[in-house]
Length: 163
Image (cartoon, rainbow, N blue to C red; front, side, top):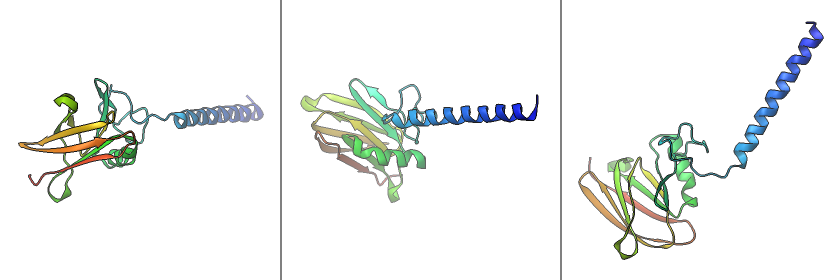
């Protein structure tokens, strides 16, 4: 193989690689997914990237929880404004908590969601309405009333002074 043919082959391979990279980048930007699938409980390998944990489903209710690592925490804080209900769980000295048992009750005392928060943040897609959020950390329970509207922005913050 002469030098001229070798240079053309290398140039063609480089152009093909760049084209593939640009196509993959455009595909990733075209996706407006907030969260991945329910097949993986971690953010590793998540379809949307950026550290966002996987979206989970319980009936018609979608939720995501986590925030233990800085990437995941940042991603959840940035996504809060896209979800109808955002919750945060903290302990002494504003320490972040995980393993908080969450139960959301809707109209007529019907359970809407029962899940364990995998980190200090939980985002929930709920239809508009009035809800009662019960959160239990270890043996201490707290309750908050929330009004979810058509626009995202309802919040419920829970703080425990226990170790």
